[in-house]
Length: 366
Ligand SMILES: [Ca+2]
Ligand SMILES: [Ca+2]
Image (tube, rainbow, N blue to C red; front, side):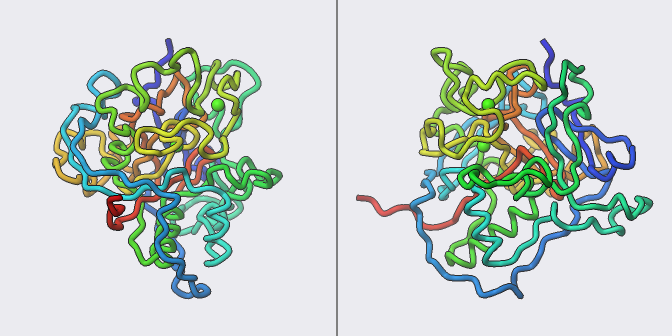
């Protein structure tokens, strides 16, 4: 069995791919810039058209009660160890990944331009020829035949013109995909969306911490391998959107979906959240450190102060969680609630989106 090996995990950066620099992608995700810590490419919305106040509606969010749980896993990837007790306070969380329809509303109101749509700043990429500095994102492009699973460049490509409205490239569109999760949005884009949602609701919205995300994903089923129990396919049924078949060139679509699915196609977890396993990876607030669990505080951990991926120590990365339609049993298993992934915050990928949490009051007792 070929297992995902974090030692070979790595990434891209698009520009580096174009220029032939040493860069790779993991099968499931994982991206980096060469050595730039976060590129600050957020776009302020302060000078944008007035944001319409809509108030805080919780219809599309679930209240996640606070509690204590066993975070991590002792028998999977090294960075999931050790299992440690963590307590999180209660919070609201989007029931689904943010959709193209929702993201379009944000863009229409603020005129926000995502990082994937912006021309990379030459100052961030000294030595890269100007004609290589083009807007784009990292896109899954399945090879025609079998390929060794240790060469991520066989299925990941930097594609000029790929962005949230063009998931696989400039000839693609999101027509008819309004209820699919938005993809090719980077961590900075997700943060800008949260800022907008905070302004329009008057309630702080933000990305979840990694601990909040895992607590919410487990849905009250503490210590289980999957968010629904111990078997990947209970009763031989796929109950999440992941990859069946031989990755990366044979996708049997046993679960009904070749790539992303409209949100909410499978049963919700114990807290009423959809697609916390699979569909698209979801950005979290925290920096990634492989050894963070050895020192994580117990109460409401907010992640390390700095990032460290030992495989790429010069690249700062943020956490992504939950796996995607590309996660396979033989290669990545990112759909496990304990599974951690890390990605450069300025990188849009065709299998990565996000959902928000809100710090509002708990629902009134009936
Ligand atoms: Ca699938
Ligand atoms: Ca997901």
